[in-house]
Amino acid sequence: MSIGALTIDVRAHQVSRGGQEIALTPLEFDLLVALARRPHDVFSRDALLQEVWGYRHAADTRLVNVHVQRLRSKVEEDPEHPSIIITVRGVGYRAGLRREGRELTAGRALRAPGGRSRWNRLLGAPARLWWSSLALRMVTITLTGTLVILVVFGYILVHQVATGILDAKRSASVSEATTSLSRLQQQLRSTDLRTGSLYERLNQLADDAARQSGQYQVIIQSPVSGLVSGGISVESVPAELEAKVAGGEGIWTQPTTVLHADPDVPGVPGIAVGSTLWAPGQTHGFPIYFIFPETDEAATLALVQRVVLTIGALIMLAMGLATFLSTRQLSRPIRRASITASRLADGHLDDRMRVRGTDDLARLATSMNGMAAELQRQINELEDLSSLQQQFVSDVSHELRTPLTTVRMAADMLIDSRDDSDPDMVRATELLQNELERFESLLSDLLEISRFDAGAAVLALDLCDVAALVADEVKAAEPLADKLETPLVVISDGPATAEVDARRIRRVIRNLVANALEHGESKPVEVTVGANQDAVAVTVRDHGVGFQTWQAEKVFARFWRADPSRVRSVGGTGLGLAISLEDAHLHHGWLEAWGSPGLGAQFRLTLPRHPDHPLVDSPLPASPVQGSLPAIVRKP
Image (cartoon, rainbow, N blue to C red; front, side):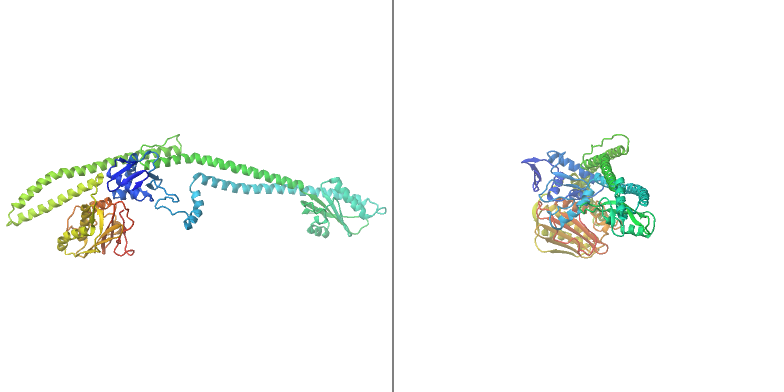
């Protein structure tokens, strides 16, 4: 097995780099093996705590960071830039392995791009991009709001300017047309029609009026044809305006498009002013129209629009740049806080943030530093307390050995010299012997627990038939089963060999069988052995009181009892299941519990056939009725 540049010999409990052995404690070795066995998984701190230490506690998760940091100092060439044990921010740790075409996430490795997963990633790319950057979100929101405001106010501004220009143009056109109409009317009245034609005079007047002004063209409609000046088309007069002029006297205006007689010349917007011109000696008037092109006004409006667009773009650019710079200025301390928190989680408890000023960001840095200092103090206290507790248990257990041996010798002398005819003496010596045996068992269990806590527990692996170990332990438990009137049944399909520590596996089976007999209420207890190509499993099923779903995680706790008022019929130290769990984890196996009130309980022990092969599944189900009963709790 290997991880990065390291070579791991699980059987010999050795780690080397380039042929040079690296000295690790048993706990550090188990931590490294746990990461190397599942190179495509990201472990949370809780998962590592259960995988390596075999228990969970809110305060203990912080100890994982400390042990990871110590392990890095031994196996990493550059602990400040680790390549073997990688921190996944916000999740936990993973082995420093990466295969081409794969990505590691906070759980399992994703499949190579393709199929539905590829489309899911493509569809989710905008959301991932949106939530990947605070500056991006702030700039986008600011620019969107600014754009909406600029569009609204720009529209209002351009509309007001256009309305003002057109109103002014309309007023000027009406005034100009009124003046010109009065002049033409006077010139026409002073014309002597005996010396010339009326229509020739009207055409001359239209040309003179357009030539003198230069701002408009004149169209005079006669019964025969329209008299037009300046080469514009008669179609420049709107039909609606013609109807108004024909319907009565007065001056009328109408927006229009100025069309030229030459079809190649494009039309331009304009204003048409219409009225009636009266000739002397005529009973009807001649409609006259003044066509004012709005070429200059259109150019002015286009200039205004360009100015508004240019100013809006500059405002957008300035707002985006200002928002980006301000967001960056604000997010920089937050990013430093995140990096500091990550390093604290990695075990760099001495890291602190730099405090500048007295604003909110400075108070954030001060709070982070205070939290880090308090965290460092509590972790140090927990480490000291844990070490003290382990040392206390170990010392007390060893110190009690000597007086216990003396008491045992005295008890043996009392038993050998007792008078069997005295029932009180017989009863007293029997009680003394039973309690001494229980006390010795408690001391042994405490010593074993202290070895686990200190990381000093080691395996003595050998190829064993687990089915034979189960048969031996069940046979040894038959006297207890007969005493409790509990049928004890073994179900096995044949040999189930695996490389295990026989002494520890015997102890696990003994504890599970004794626990089932204790809580089985004289109902049958079935012990089943199963195996597949990679694993061996043992289940112990009773039909007794069972336990609640919330109690499933507590059954492996030290000195915990589901019903404290229940009287023990077997007797025990309260450490049996806790030690069994530690033994299972030492083999890189699983010990799981299922239970239901009134239906009993089942414990499943799953062991790999070879210590360097990680478990994937178990040959036996975790519950008696898979999928229909609650509370299957794995202790990985």
